[in-house]
Structures are given as C-alpha cells and as structure tokens.
Length: 204
Image (tube, rainbow, N blue to C red; front, side, top):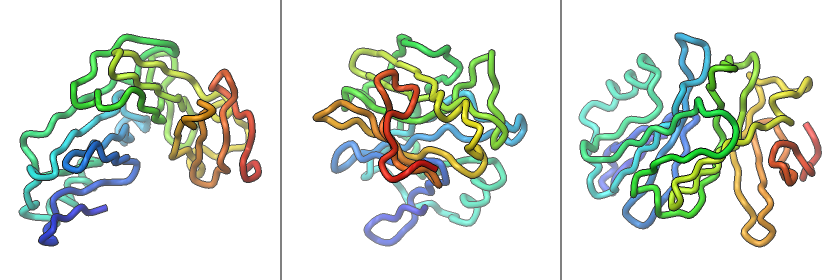
C-alpha cells in the first residue's frame, strides 16, 4: 500500500502484514513482526513506527524504495527522519511481563495484536508450524500479557501457510475478545483466551 500526501506524492510504503492505526488527526502508528527468510521463521520482535503526518516528506525514488522492501525483506518505508521506532520482543514466555513502553504508545490503555512467539523453546517455521499468541499491551501500566492460541497452534485442520488470523478486538460492553482471519471464520475466544468459544459464521 502506498501512502500519499495531498499533492499526490508518495510519502510511505506499507507492506503486507503491516497494521496501521490512527492515533489522532496528525499522528499514526504502524507495526509488524515480519518473516525472516534466512531462518525460515518469524522475526523476534514486533516493530512499531510512530509518525507525524506533517513530517512525512515525499520519497525521492519510489522504485528504489519498492526494491528495498523486496530485496531487504522490509515491511515499511517512510521518508521521515524524526519518527520514533519501538521494538517489542517476542521471545518472552507466556504470561505477564513488565515492559517499558514509549510515551507515544500511551495514548491507549490497551492494545491487542497477534504475534508469533519466538521463545527459545520453540521456533516457528512459516507455513510449517505455529506459535501464534495474543499480545495484550497495556502501555499505561507497562504491562505485557502473552497468551498462546491453542486452538490455532494445535490444530490438525488448519494450513498454516494458507490460513492465518488478521484482526482482533475487545467488545467494550462484554469485554469478550473477537478475532477474524484469512480463510478463517470470525470467532470469539473463551475465558482462557486460548481457545475458541464460538464461531460466528461457521467453522473453517
């Protein structure tokens, strides 16, 4: 995806597997974990880029930037020297951990996202096996909770190279967590947050 300014000039490239979240009218955050072709596994961090819209400059050579994403296996390119980058480790064991978040992330009390654990006891291989986890970031209290998705990781029916989760959100009224994905029906997690309590539009 190419982001342009009001003049139609390209200011950022957002690759596959990236998430973009507006913070307010002038700021947004992009995050991604990414895949490491050298190890055939997922990268051991989730990168967050915090950007100000007014500080984004036109990319001088858009073709070179596109080549950079392809050749260096990058996921995000923006022409902004002053933006903040935060790397969240993914090698924690399941459970709750203390993490020092940047001030830019403290605009929200909770941020839910999907990620793949890269803890030493298990190294996921893209398309072969899975270590999918729910990451519950609580920036204002510097807390991180990592919850393995047993329903996905232990499945004998899912094709990990063909099906994956993409969206997650908490219902503010019921506090239940909902998810969705590619070639996966929408679902609601149970109280443990490890398994599916209910499929919304029919199971895969």
